[in-house]
Length: 298
Image (tube, rainbow, N blue to C red; front, side):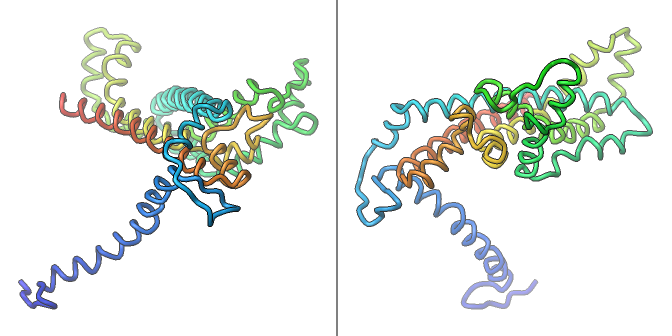
């Protein structure tokens, strides 16, 4: 063992600190410091066009969030978008994984094909679907009109636009749930399933009592990351609808962007950011504790 000391510290210990401290400083610089600044700004009257005249505002920025209809509407839109987007991607991802897992020879091919939407940038996905759903030039409306269904205005009305944004998000991120769930299915032991079949269990009973509990930890991990990503989604919605029509598809992330870079109200935008951070933190803590509880029970 090398006991050589440098500056009064063992050489191995000094090397450990020398390797770790730069990474810690980078994390503090790009994550912790901006988070602290955001928290401080949320209690200030801070307008970007008048940055020299900042003043303490107390809870005024937080009160304004709940008193203004636009902010409350963006919260409800975010919750709707997150709930239905995550739920649909979990259901479809699980169904596709079960289907592909039942295949033998062509499983690798389907794994690659179904993973392709996830590999695209959200901006690319948004622009691509915006062209596909175009009222006059979009190929989807070409098929709907050929079937006698007319040309739906996918992004023209509020409720229909929210449905379309959820649909596009599910199309892009269902492959993520599919990949994780398929890996979980492939890791499950076959002996309990074979024993259940010998005992006369049907396919639904095997799924309900063996397969689903076996992949539930994987689904919870997928749900946690999907909730975080969907809740703070910005690029997909911005490139697809920019929050329109009106403010029908404006989520909290878009509302923060508009408040900060169109209204230049940094204090209000910071308060919205802190609120979104707290909501995501509470959801993550709940899901992590739920997973740990299940693990300890096992």
